[in-house]
Length: 540
Image 1 (cartoon, rainbow, N blue to C red):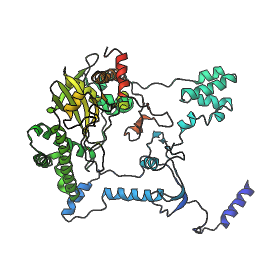
Image 2 (image 1 turned 90 degrees about the vertical axis):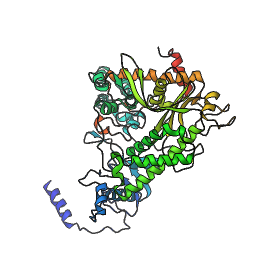
Image 3 (image 1 turned 180 degrees about the vertical axis):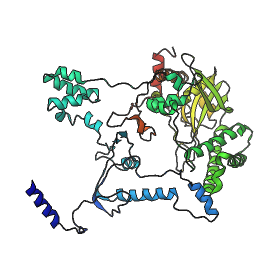
C-alpha cells in the first residue's frame, strides 16, 4: 500500500494543468446560470426541479412597484426583481438550447426526503419534441420501470433482494409477480410476512375541519376529487400563497369579473353597443379608484396594464351584450346565493355569477377569466361539479336548461366558433336553442354556444330528459365525496396533471413516477353520465 501511495503521489506531482484545446473531445461541467455554452454535441441538464429557472419573489423591502414610483422622484434603484428573473431565464434557456445532437433532461422526484416538482423546462420540452413514432415523449420513471417489469430479473435473482423489494410500497401487479417467484422457490411464508398493506392517511374528525355551520362549498368538493390531500391543506388547514407586490393574474380576473357583475343588470336598458361600451369604460375607470386597484396606476407599466384592463373589460362586456341582445333570456339576478341540501343536515352553499330566465326556463352563467374546462370527463370525475350543482339550485322548480362558462377574457387569435362562446352543458331542444339565440338559422350551429337548430347532434346539447338526469349526477357525486371527506380521507391521490403546478407538493410526500401514477379516465360522454343516474334510480 505504501509503495502504491508513493507511485500515485509521484504521478500526481508530475501532472501539469493547462487549457483543453477547444476542438478536443471533452466534458465540461458547469452551472446553468454561470456557464456560457456556445455549443455542445450532447447536453445533460440535471436536477431540473420547480426551482429552475430560479425566480425571486417580489417581497423585498422595496417591491418593483415601489421602485418604479421612486424613479419618478429621481431615485434610481436597479436591478428590479423582474429584471433579475428575466436574466436568469435567458441564461438557462441559452445553455439548454446549446445542444447539437442530443439533449438529456433529468429531475429528481425527491430532494433531501422532500418531494420536488418538475421544472417548466420539462413541460416546454414535452411540448416541443415528440417520440420517433410521432407520439408524446414518455419520461423514464421508477413507476414506468415497475410497470414494464424492467428490474424484475434483478429483484428475483436471489431471495434477499426479492424479499427486500416486497417490503416496499409496490403496485399489486408488481408485488404479485415477485411473490409468485418466491412462492415457486419455496419461500412463501417469508414472502407473506414481508407484504404489509400501506397505512391510509386519515384524520379523526373531518366534519369539524371541512364544514362550517353545516355548510361546504363546491370548490372544496372539486378540490377533494382533484386530490384529497390538497383539499386537506387548502380547505382544511386554510393554507394560502403569500401575496406579492406585483399585479397577479387573479387581480386582473377579479377586475373583469367586477365590471361584468356591475354592468349585467343594466344591459336590458342599454340601447346599443356604443352606449354599452361607454358605460363599461365609466364603470372600469371608477373601479380602478378602489383600494384594491388604485396602486396599479402608480407606475408607467401599471398605467399600461390599467389601460389594457379597461380595453379588455369593454370588449368582454360587448361580447356579453351581443349574446343577451340576440336572446330571449334576460338577466334575473347576479351574485345569487344558493343552497343544496345533502345528507345529515350538510348543505352546499355558494354564489352564482348570473342567472338568466325566459318564461319557465332558467340558465346560469359563470364568468371565467382563466382556462375554461367544460369536459364531461372531468365532470364525471368530480373535478367540475359547480355549474350543474348551481343550476339545480337556481332552477327551484323551474326548467333547468343550461349551465355555461362565459370566457371573460380576450384571446388574440382567430377562433372559428367565436371568441366569447358559452361553454358548458345544455338542454339542446329546439325551443331552448331558439330562445337562447334568436339569430340561428335552420340546420346551422349557434354563434354563441355549441348546439344546432334542428341539425347535427352535439354531446353537450342533450334532450330534456337526458339533461335532467345529467344534472342529478352532480348531487350523487357530491354526496359520495362529502361522505369520504368527512370520514377523514386525506390520502394523496391526484387526478391527471394535478401535481404539475400543485403548491402543496413539498408536503404530501407523493412523487409521480415513484409512488404511483395520477388518476386518469377515458373520455366519457354526457349520455353515459345520465345513464348512471338512471341505473341508480335518480337521487335515491
